[in-house]
Length: 77
Picture 1 (cartoon, rainbow, N blue to C red):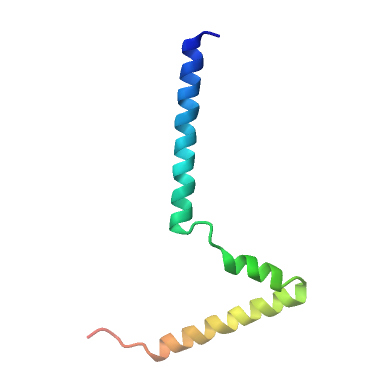
Picture 2: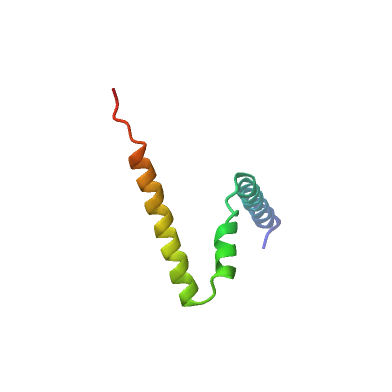
């Protein structure tokens, strides 16, 4: 291969590496990789029974929030 082709390949690969690095840094800065709840829930709820209990608890929490929103609802003037 000629040295011109090698120089182009090195330049393109360096450019793509810089784009990847900026993407990774952006993801870290904006919290794209912060999913602590999913990780902790996976550790906490190992079996099917625990997962069913967790799903029921989430449904109960959502119903309570919905009921509270309906209670505090005020139509626009």
